[in-house]
Length: 228
Image (cartoon, rainbow, N blue to C red; front, side, top):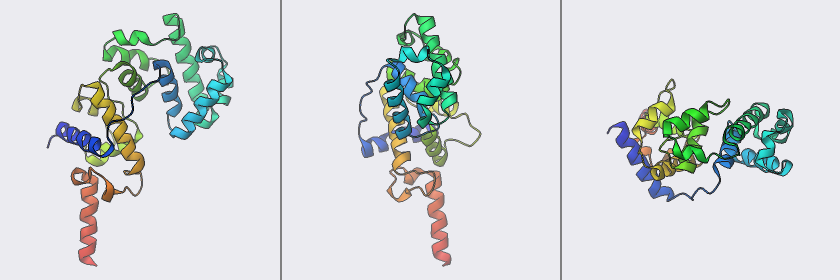
């Protein structure tokens, strides 16, 4: 089975297990802000920081004009608050200054590559953050790789530690945005519920039969059982 075929199989198995994910309803700017806040933290901390940001500022346009230190104090719960505040103020003010309003709608008219280039040229916005905005808000066929997805793909044998995960995985996945969104969200759910960083629950995993790490662990357990 090729890497491309394996990822297609993964998508099918996860769809059987988890079903169709909910539709995305946030604006592109809201998605960008939430994704920046999500970097190196969990959803609980991200959501708390986002709520506090919206409570302290009348709108996201006000964040573009705010002092970075003030923003940092508001989003402390997200971790790396000074770094994230610098990113948010920088990218929001850039959008407003270049577009005349806090609106990312112009990305719809760009190619995926040009949209990725524009977003990642802002300090603190990487491929994952840019990819989420492009895929979920503009149906651009770019697959964002977060920590959970990187871990699962490494265990499946699709990545090695030195790989650029986005450059490695994107040529292997579907070019249909709906399929990519489902695969992205399902892999994240798998990582949270089953394929944990430590002690993954391989006995409950729908991918175990073709997962290199799970097969290796099963082989080691069998050898230990024979030797005991």
